[in-house]
Image (cartoon, rainbow, N blue to C red; front, side, top):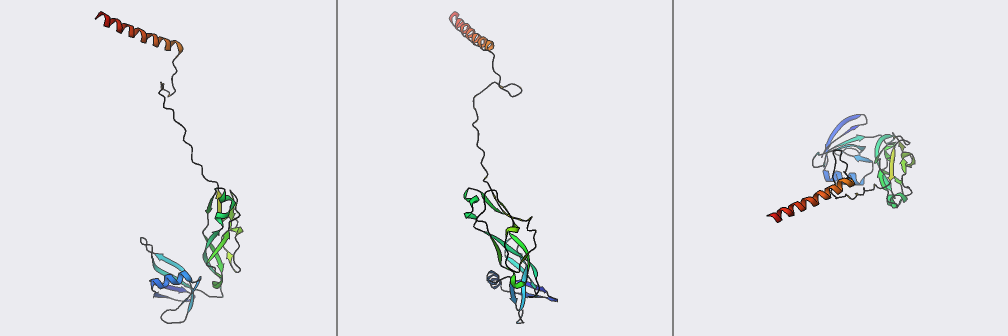
Amino acid sequence: MPGVVYGGGDEPITFAVDALTLRATLAHAGAVLDLKVDGGSATPVIVKDVQNHPVRGEAIHLDLLRVDMNQPIHAVVVLELTGGDESPGVSEGGVLSQETRELNIEALPDDIPDSISHDVSDLEMNATVTLSAVTVPQGVTLLDDVDETVIATITPPTLEPVEEEIETETELVGEDGEPIEPAEGEEAEAQAEGATGDEAASGSDDES
């Protein structure tokens, strides 16, 4: 995989590294790596950017930044929430949502943690947690707004609407869509007309 290292007041240097070796190194190393190019001396670097293939998703280019181990730098670390399944809010059926997954920090290169964790096992239903509740390792400074940055919430479950039974009886409907109720006199007259019609039909059959 091609890559480039820059910063620290020196000229950028391009290099190539075996993709499997790089993957294993990034999986087991800390925030700071020791880079040797063509057998040269080791240089402390951090991963600045990894470019991935838009379709296959695999890494195709690596950017490294030289760092001074005695100077604090800005970095991004992962925020991990622990104890979610044990919280009272989740036990009551609530939904735990992690609103913030990465934190911007400042620290010396050796003090940059792989991740920062926060225990949410005591969260009640409808709870909202901001970044101010997170404890960071010594030497680490949070750069995000600790009072405004929401990291997690627990909300009640969404209830599914209950379908109402639909009446299937056939009714007379007026122009305004409202059912028409026949008056008592009209109903009796309709019944009488029906009876008269039946008698007339019967008389016709007798004459024939």
